[in-house]
Image (tube, rainbow, N blue to C red; front, side, top):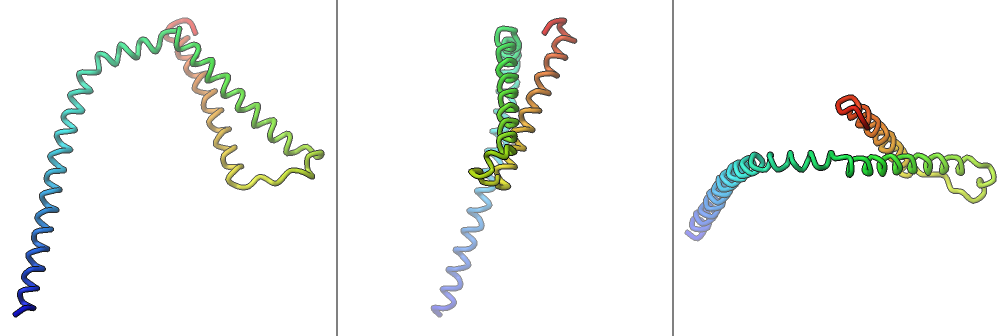
Length: 136
């Protein structure tokens, strides 16, 4: 008799757990739907304000210094990478250098790609701004 009661209690426990999981899934679905609706409404209401902010960020007083900083940072990064490779290739430093490991070379390739992408984006922005507005 004790075994049949234990089986019944276990079945009841698993049933309760199953219903709790179902209830949690339902509550999660309702919460996500409500959050999605609230996010959509807030984005829609903030869009007009967002456009004013985007126009103010596109003003020359902030756009030109940001382009200059991006250009200077990318050029500095390219200069540092070129100098690093030149110093590594220098025969006079062969006795004290340790070979670059795979992770370091991978990081340098990523830095090179980011610097080149930054230069490309600055050039594209300058060309497009000149095309649409007549000045850089």
